[in-house]
Figure 1 (cartoon, rainbow, N blue to C red):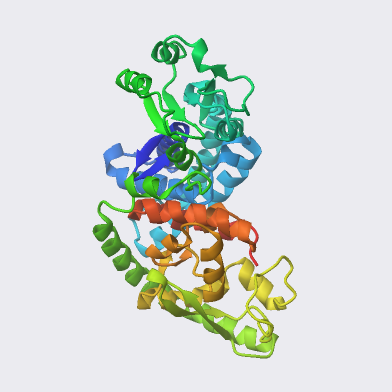
Figure 2 (figure 1 turned 180 degrees about the vertical axis):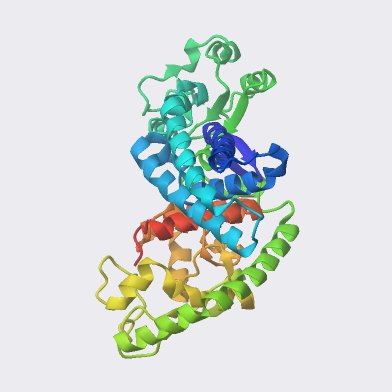
Length: 461
C-alpha cells in the first residue's frame, strides 16, 4: 500500500486511478479533435486547450472517486463498476457544463461534451475489461508471513481470503506449543534459519500475530529479517492499515501512545479544517436556505409539531451542545426516553422517511458547523445518555471526543447505520482511525465519498 497523508491506498487502486485519469485526458482530446473535424476547424496546438482538457478530466475523475468507482465491489464486479462509471461520468459532465456556464470559455464547448462523455465511458469500461484481471492478480498482492497460529492468525487468514484482499499469506509459523487455530502452520522448531526461510518465500512483510508476546518475541530473527529489507509489523498496526479501522480486540494503551498518529501538524490541520468549515457552511447555508424553508413548511403540514428538532449531543472534549435538524419523527417519539432508532421505526413520519433517506434533515446542522460546535467531518455526535452507557461498555470510547463531531465521517461512509452496542463498537473502530489519522486529505476523501452514501443510501433511519 501507498501511504498518502497518513492514509493508506492500495497499489492497485492508485494504478487504476492514474490510468483512468490518463484515459480521460485522451477522451477529452479525442472529443475535441472530432468536433473540430466536423465543423472544418483547425484544432490548433494541444497547449491551447490543455486547461480545458485537464479541467474536464479532473472533474470527471473526482466524480468517479465520489461515487465509489474505486471501492472494493467496483474493483471485483464489472457490472457494478459499469453502473458507477455511468453515474460518475454523467455527474462529471453536468459539473463541467456548470463550470462552462459560470466561467464561459474556461471549459469545453458544450457541443463537445456529448462526445467526451461517450468516449470516456467507452475507454474506461474497456480499460476495466483489459486490465481488470491484472489489477486483481497476485502481482499486486503482498506476500506475508505470519508469526503465530492462534486466534489472531486465524483472523488474518479470514482477512486474506476476502475478495479484493491486498495481501496473500504464504506461511504461518507456530511460535509455541499452544493450541493452534491454523492447522497448516509450521512449527518454529522445524525451521533452522527463519530469516532465510522468509527470504526463500520472497515475502515482503512479516506480521506478529502472537497471542502472548512476553518472552516470546524472536528478537534476533526479527532483527535479521528487518535488516534484509522485509517489513516487520505488529498485528494491531497491520489491521489498522488493511481495514481502515483501529481493532479494539487487540489494541492496548501503549500501542495508542507509541504508534504513529494523534500528532504531527495537528494545529495546522485544525486551522485549515476550521477555515474550510466557516467558508463552506456559510456558502451552503446561503444556497440551501430555500430548501430548508420549503421542507420546514412541508414538515409542519405533514404532522403536528415544530418544523425543527433540537436535541442535546456530546461534542468536543465531552462538552454538550444542541444539534438542530428538520423534524423527521412524531413529537412524542421520546416520551418514554431516548432510545436507538430501528428499522422501519414507527416513530418516523411519512415525510421523515424521505428527508432521512436523502439527508435533507441534516442541513440545519450546518449552523452548528458555522458556530464551531461541529465540523463537516468527524464522529457522529451522540446524546449524553448513550455516551455514558457506551463509555462504560466500550474501551477508548471517550477518545472519539478528542475531535469535533461531524455531519459526515469515516464511520458514516464505511459502516451502515447501527443501533446496538455491537454496531457502536464497530463504528468506534472507524472513529478512532479518523481521530488518529485525520488530515485535510482524509477530510476531502470523506466529503467526496459522502455523495456515494447519499446516492445509494445504506441503512438511513
